[in-house]
Image (cartoon, rainbow, N blue to C red; front, side, top):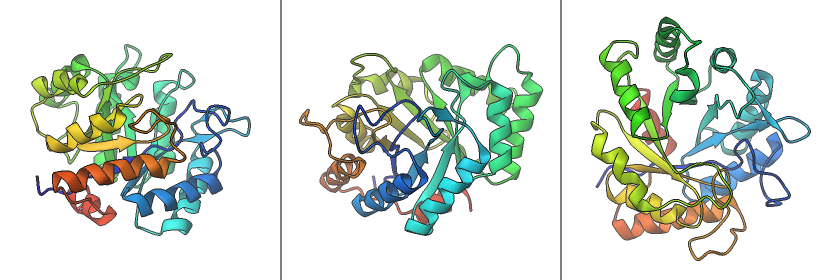
Amino acid sequence: MNQPLIVTVAPNGAYKTKEQHPNVPLTAAELAQAARECLDSGASMIHMHVRKPDGKHLLDAHAYLEATAAVRKAVGQELVVQVTTEAAQVYQPYEQMQVARDVTPEALSVGLREILKPEVLESDIQAFFTWLKDSNVMTQVILYDAADVQAWQRLRASGVIPENKWFLLFVLGRYSAGQTSSPTDLLPFLEINDNAYPWAMCAFGPQENACAIAAASLGGHARVGFENNLFLKNGEQAASNAALVAQVNQGAVALGRPLATAQDIRNLFLN
């Protein structure tokens, strides 16, 4: 339990709008402000989406580099900046992999099921993950259920996924109207996980914080923020992403678990 807790903030996601919450950050400047606030509340990594001018989901190297530069200006190297390849029902696997290559970010999240598709050759998946390793991109692999965990383990065992310092993210629930998650949603993942790599969770709804603290108590890490949840643990709407991060910080104090810094993350995954 002495391993520092990595608190990642996911401040916007692919779908949240200003109509849902006025403080959802959509522009590079807004992401930079959210990054500063969340750093001050205890976050050590930001999971960042970029949007088109109309607010719709975007995968674009220039937009990612612009947003990354804005965040770096606001926080320097005090946050790990993670971008995403999320399809959001818009992009295809080869487009997702290409934007990663075009950006070559410090950190990246990849939904395994989004690229593990019949039209994608396993040799191309192998080439992509080998490139991520060789390029020293800190990669978080998103897994939505036990079947995804089994697919991940199969790809590793067969050599499609090379050995590396991977980071896993267990998603507790799905996008849907009124989606909520529970700490017990962690159990199917933990029952099958082989503990080969560090893991974190993200969750939906007001129990996001309870899920984060459950993960922290079990040796995992936490991702919170407006991407998946707009509510505090008491059911009231959160004023900001920083308020959701602060709740996890409070829980970590109660557990006696220190918070990770960005350098702790780099030492764990990149050095």
